Image (tube, rainbow over all chains, first blue to last red; front, side):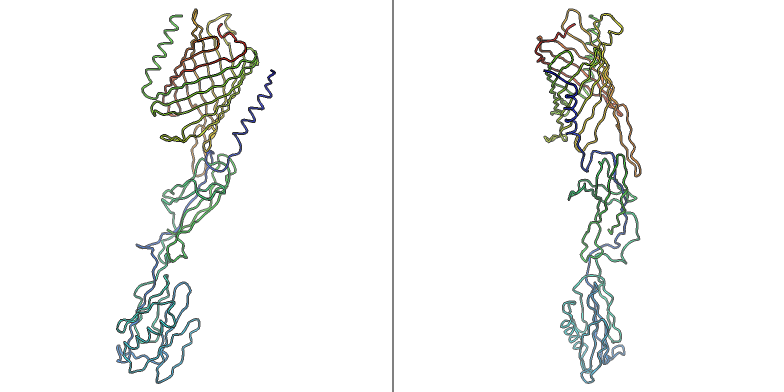
Amino acid sequence: MKFNFLYTSIAFITLFSLFSCKKVEGPGGNSSITGTVKGQYILGSSSEARAEVTEITVTHANGVDGSILENSDYFLLNTPNAGTYYYVWYENTNFPGQDPNLAGRTGIKVTYSNSESNVLIATNTASAIQSIAGADFIVSRVADIVTVTNTSVGEVPDAEEVNTPFIVDVALQGKSAVSSSSLSAMGLIADERVYLIYGEEDFYSESVRTDENGRYQFKDLTRGDYRVYTFSVDANSTTGQLIRVEVGGSITDKKQVVEVEDMTVIK
Amino acid sequence: MRSIFLGFLVAFVAFSARSQSDLSTWIGAEAKYVVNKKWSYGFELQSRNDLRIGQMSDLLASPSVNWKLKKFLEIGLAYRLTSVPFADNTTNRVVKNRFTLDFTFQKIEDFFLDKSRFSYSLRLRGTRETQLDERTENTLRLNTKVDYDIRKSKIDLTAAVEVFYRFQRDVSYTFTDVITTSGLNRLRFRVGMSYPITDRQKVEVYAIEQFRYPDGNPEFIMGIGYIYDFSPKKKANKK
């Protein structure tokens, strides 16, 4: 049997190659991916979304506060999320009035007479709103107070009495899950969990938390492509839904520190 | 001779006395096949157990080939497959692959002495060990070994010191840089004795004390090995 060092070496090198094939993305290297999470915090005790509630106290006829409902008087009702805007206008049955025809708004007509009581006008107002804008409002009445609740949650331009003698109050301010007016100033997000996905994988393999400066780092990575993500409250959501904020990075060399883009979130 | 043997026993007992802290056992069996004066092959199986944990630790299988290039120089290639526990208290295991290239300078005493019962050898070993999801370990090792052939006895005594130098032993990360440090990784002292049962069979026992760095924590290892020579024609082991 003849032995040859060359052949033996080739056999070993082949074996070596089998176990030293190119590594896929993941641990086992000496590179890292680092980045920063910044964003805004939702202020207040709750980020729960809610619908706006408006109360309309109907005052008329008896000259309460010296006010008398007049022909073509109107007040405004609004909806969130760029929905339909309304105006509720009044026409005296004895003196046909003129529809204000406000551009961009849908009119709701309520007829009345000077002899009608506040309660009756309130009843008719509630019926008219329910009839025309039932999809946008839930309407109820107690005595001369009509309560209009938006069916959609979110921020709503406040209702306005305009030229009616009514008292129009916002009983409960509508609110989105995220309200621009309720966010803190932009800052660094501490103790936020950040996830790392290797290559084309679907699910994360590692996670870390940010330090007090919003910084994070994934270590011991091999060359390849990575995706980093964290979660943010969806600013457009009315239910506080979380969305993924993701950035990508590629490690192309050994001992490399790849700084990925900042991730901006709302918490 | 007696003083050497006693000295050896003292060293062995001294090693053993430290065994309360970190004690492992290595139990192995090796098959050898000497083809001719230049070529030899080997295959070793070994089980390494950490007695502190009380469970099987590492299982090794290692084929090797040696080529005696010159009288004083032998080159060796070896592959080692190691099965290690994935974590403590689990039966899941992962494998390591190690490739070794040895340059062994033998019979160094012949440069200085005409005849001696001592035999000196120096081995320079490079290893590359890989494991899935772990950093590749590249190590350079220098082993100095002294063998002593006891007169009128079949027992051989061995003492060796080996230094391990690990490339990129430590890796530290900042937000801007990765800093790697190479350095002394391990220092190993070994004493042992071997005894031929028959022409083809041999047993050996040994004790190892090693220090891992940078911590410098000592570990003690008791080992036993069995060697069987499959060579067509038995080569003389004894001088």
